[in-house]
Figure (cartoon, helix red, strand yellow):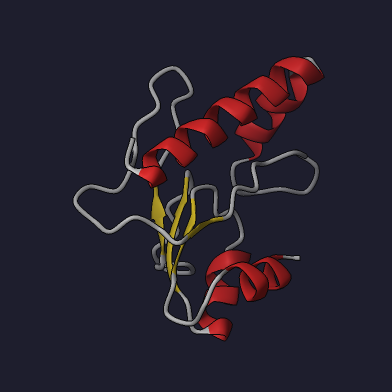
Amino acid sequence: MIAHIMYYFSDQNDLVFDPMAGGGVVADTCLAFNRKCWSFDMDDRPDTRPEIEPYFWDITNLKWPIKGKTKPDLIIFDPPTSPEGEADGGQVRLILNELPRRKRRGIKMSVLSFLSQQAAGN
């Protein structure tokens, strides 16, 4: 699905932003499709995924993690949804899954709204 989104909604050399990189599918797809990528995840894995920068999203105090850089051409927002078998960020997945569905959706929509506003420069 990521490849289809990237193919149809971005061009070569476009900048793609992945605020919750997880295993790095977006970063890998960017490499394959000749896109630039900013990837962030709460797990710091400099030995295995040096292209993914460590960043923890604090839902009570959302901040744009990129200072003084160009705005992305595409944001791929794929928040964690399941704790089963996940080593990276499993704690956040577990916390999200313990919340009622409506509350979980509200948190995801808040982060998505914030990312959209920041990307638009508002």
